[in-house]
Image 1 (cartoon, rainbow, N blue to C red):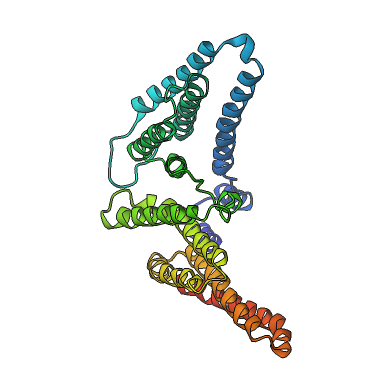
Image 2: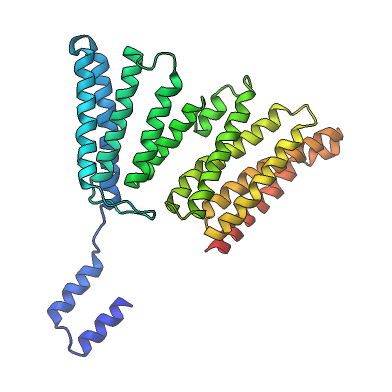
Length: 324
């Protein structure tokens, strides 16, 4: 379409041959955006700087001294926070744009330095004594304040992770599965509580129109933790009749999330719902087939997975079309 317009402008004499050639060159060699590449490099730079300082301090802790290290970390955090408060845009309930390209990364460095400072204080001087909950509660409150005040979803993710630590668990699905959850079934209920809190915060963010864009992070963590915990509960109580209630929990959780994903046209959350629901339904059907103890039915087990895999793919394709 651009070339049709360009040709028409040339034919009507509105642009000259020289301008025409420049336009052709411009479209033949479009500019390459480095926006996300630069953002990735900046993010990696902050993470590498934070990690590098940690390694440097660890290897030279005997010669540098604890006070000097704490002063250095506190100085980095203070300078970064000072810059961010000075550049900060006015608070708004809606999304606020960063004042410049470096702002988000300097704020991230400030928060990471702050967490390192508190962690160092607790490790070396045990300033919180045996009250470990304070060592996680204070960073959590500060991170939530910073996330909302500066409108930073990366810091919001750190705050959610810290909230999980405050509750004595980890917020990542991998850690959930490797956290010896089957040896400590009480953790199932703690994970469920955390998932419920995160899903409630997602709902409130939208309902109250207060930082609605934070909803994604709350849902992301809440959906994964909720479904993995319910499936873990089913397999842990597999031999008991009450195990079915854990699978019913998957259905109860899936329905409102499905309605919400359709409303928001989010294929990502539809994909999660379909996959987790497929695992739950398959676990139940395989269990029923094994209970029959019929060789003919067992032979059909591979056929079940082939047919359901096709249905699963078609369902995802249809859902993708539905939300487009």
